[in-house]
Amino acid sequence: MVIGVLALQGGVREHAEMLRALGAQAILARKPNDLDNLDGVVIPGGESSTIDRLMRIFGLADPLTEALRGGLPVLGTCAGLITLATEIEDPAPGQKSLGIVDMRVRRNAFGRQVDSAVETIVTRYGAVRAAYIRAPEVVSVGGDAEVIAVTSERIVGVETPSALAVSFHPELTGDTTIHERFLSKVRGTVDA
Image (cartoon, rainbow, N blue to C red; front, side, top):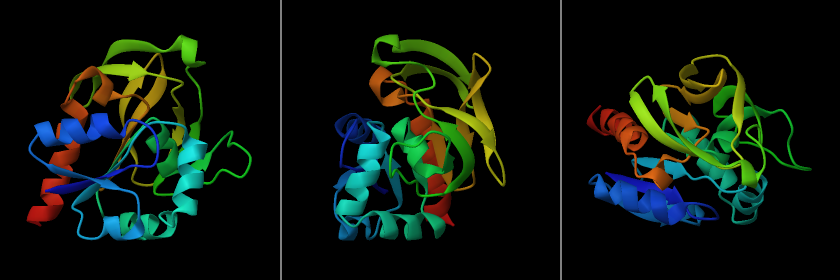
């Protein structure tokens, strides 16, 4: 399995290392042709408006959107969740999203950087050690989006047939549960 990690900003190295530890080949995706021949892609956490702006500057937004709409499996963590949403409730000036997962999100819902925390949450796939850093929340879901994780009555995980999006950073805690679920989605696509 060849997984591209969108390498514009954020937790790129941590995702790549975790994917490699789980047996996938991880490549860093910075240019449109880096998206060719991928079995899946990860949009890491970071600053969502910066990721959006850099995707547009480097010409990645349109080809990535096309690939994702074509069924390329994707994992989005924190800012990646925001990037995948159909609606951002409080976007930065000029900020857009890819519109892949039918959900409305609110940026920085868990507070400022100093409010960062690590906690264990229950997901549909088991307990996950999750790091929250200026994390978003999912305000609502529609279409084929299903809630897979809730904490403090906030939606923090959503899944569709081809996408997995979480508000937190499992790659920072070393918990592989979410990445394993993502790779099972990729295997289902590869084997299909």
